[in-house]
Image 1 (cartoon, rainbow, N blue to C red):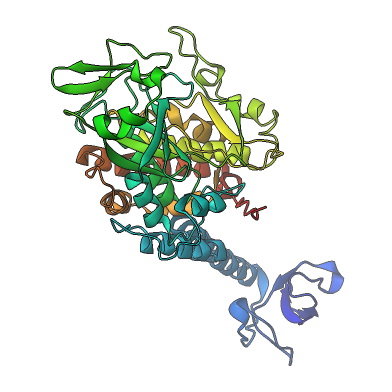
Image 2: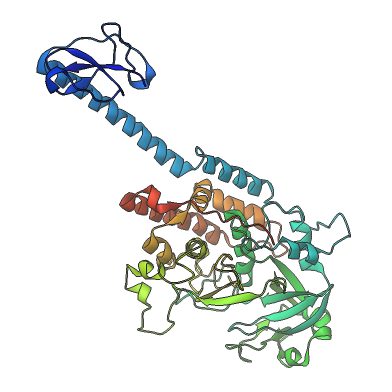
Length: 471
């Protein structure tokens, strides 16, 4: 340890180790000197050495104390500014640099060429996509075959068509060449249609499924099944391979072929209609059967009953109760719920009353971003209640926070334009919805900053990446 000179109130000097503190002759309190005297070298702030200047009496002591306070305040200010910069920009820390590299990889792979094909024939596109799935991702960070898989989704021959699986909204279950199951959601609205009423009102929006998948890519979550837009000929592609149950729901409205399917809200009076025989829709790739799903009630779900509020809608301390319930009391699930709240707020999805994870996962599975079609309904509506998990728990993953900051200043809408330009049903979103993404992103970052101001960054930004290996 290095000895430092200290000044006593009497003007005497003594040497002390370690550098802070000391006792003078007679027990008087010592004040640290930043120099050296009588041959003793002192270590000052910044590691520099100086000649000690002897100051006698209370005035000298007071001046030394003031200098130390000023320097200490300056150092603390600089440290605080540096931490704010790192937290806001996410580039200075090791975690921030890692997140920036991941962001650059996403940017590099964002554009997907139309008509891409696999360069080998050893595996089908469905086998490749199936092998991508793991406990914490539906597809990996780097997917050079993604464009080819999406092209196959949008062009492969339809072998079978049936009514949709369960649910409240109209859909069809298709089987593509090679036995791959997909979910077809038909077009119900034009791009500029505004869905009025409750934030969960209206029919499913097929284009919202496409846009949500690409937002999942951009945010780096990789928890949404693959989705692509597709035009299908109902007369030549669907009806020849349709089951009797599906065929029984077909009808004509003028020159347009329509169907109303089988679901909780499906009605013959409210069919989905093609333009002539050509119907626009979205195809969602069915997850592999080796990854069975488990359904959970969302802890921040709505009651869907007029005049009856869910507990989270009136109890601001609700998150503390959630933290005591499995699977939110341990593991990544609560942070997944908060990630999902950010995702849903950006797309305007207030209808996530349930969610799915993989079965028998011990709470380690991701929250899978399925059924995103109740999104992009009203670009002018920012439904803040969707963010309740974020502002009630006041916590978010560091990696999510960094990614959000990388997407500020219009970068989010720009990335979405680039990603969606590939899709066969381009333009996928109206410009008003792209602008809404940037506006809502500002709302998310403002909410996180309020949490940091209230409880500090260390209690708000959580380092939890959960990079689980594939089985």
